[in-house]
Image (cartoon, rainbow over all chains, first blue to last red; front, side):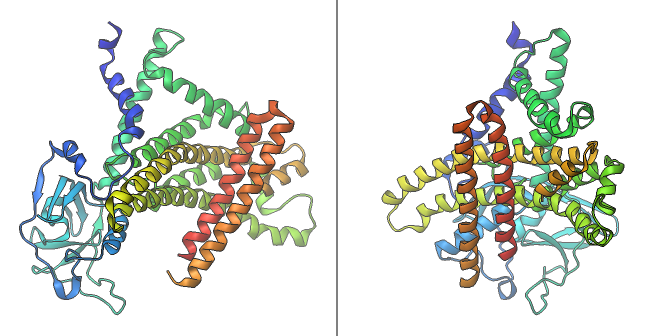
Length: 396
Length: 64
């Protein structure tokens, strides 16, 4: 029995295959997903400790357009609990809570269910914390939040190391990647041809090597960077696809995550750079001395704009995709006639979702491609200077 | 978003659209002339399109 030997990988393969086709996207309000949340505990938020004067009535009846905007903004942000959907009438949120870890005169660890989605004050060791617009603030027992003239809270914000929704998603993806690729590596011990899900992964790895790493970095030096390129490619791709599921995850559309990914590329590029790369930055060969002085700050800035473009591209693409999909679904709720709007909305959503699946791959590909391009520029030997210049100028 | 911002966003999109159209058109031409180099042309096309897109997105986000 071949199958019985690899149940884990079969499940993973099915999961990865179905990731993108489970549903269209992150529906605004969708009752069909009740089934996915059966196993999760429900939070009945009985108390609505609202600070009406300062907080504004978010849960009062609103214009559907404002509600949709608020929902989309909320989705794009990270959150301290994993909510699949909420029952607005009863004030219930279906999902599970995640650990909150605060560094505030010592480590404070508690469950995010204590925060009650920002509706109640959490008391931990005599300190009071309140969730306000996705950030945790230190408050008094009543949960008062003070504001400055721009309506920004002035309360103390403790250092937040919580396992948030995004962190959970990233950990999940990392475990998935680890299982998939150790499985593939193990299958090579038995023979040259991988078995099971490895047959899907092998062509992708070969693709990264032959189409991305070797042409950009070069036959001699590519091996050292394959680990990073493969990791970053599959990490971004899986997270992009995870964002297309109705789980409501938006990791690669979070600028902190993309900043980190771009920083990896930046540091790998800078630390693997050779003498000629630095020579081209600080003292451009082959141009008059005044030009060398002018070019130096431009080139230094150029090293920073490259990863900046990298992080903005990934962040903006994924964010835009999520916003478009959710706005299209929201058409059902904003429009007057549900029977006329529903088919249009669903059709457009399906169309955009299919494009987004392509974008999910494309952005992972582009990120890996440009990373390898930058690394390649840093490690390649400039045999003829003119040629090297042209290449560097093309990539802004 | 003010109305001026919206006009700016529209201009960015027009510019990006023109750029993408030019890239796509040229790539089509090139592939029609040399179908055997289609793979390389596509890769180059995607890179340039991504660079352009990054610029357009940067403008949209900074202008927001």
